[in-house]
Image 1 (cartoon, helix red, strand yellow):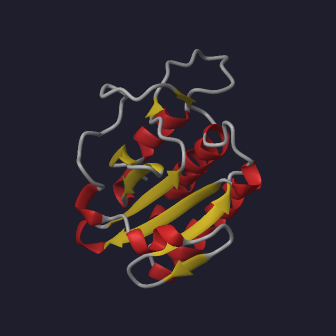
Image 2 (spheres, rainbow, N blue to C red):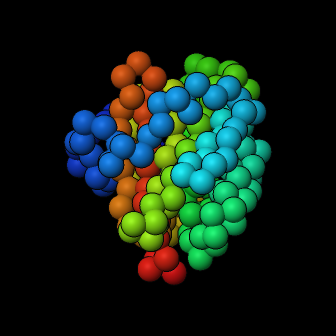
Image 3 (cartoon, helix red, strand yellow):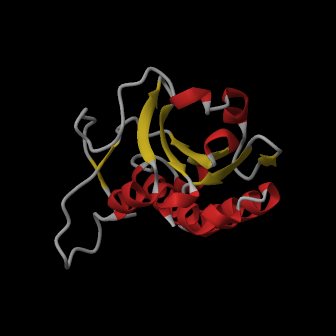
Length: 176
């Protein structure tokens, strides 16, 4: 959507270098969801989408519904913006050489009540990590990861050996 992907580099503007996702947020069992499948519980939610443009709006609705179920609506606006950028980037960049309708983008959410936040993770099969680019004022793209950085407490990405990557963000109410 609003960021260009380049070969992975440590200075990509995100928190990186951890061997696994922060604090064990990623649920490997949920990684098996097929396109169109999802689940929502007290401690997690997940939904798998095809890498097509309509998935961005569907992911926002999923986030909004999940946060309503968890009573965490104060972060809905910011988290919907973050998921729009991350899913949009995945739909744009994870399809190289793939059929978009058959390319899976997986969204996982995890409430973090101990730190009054929500973890949002978006996985796709593209192994290259996201990289913030400098966008001039008239550029049509390049601002998305800057928005993620502005509306998240912290964000980053991790490679998933043989399965692409997971881009994650932690969002709490103080970003409002």
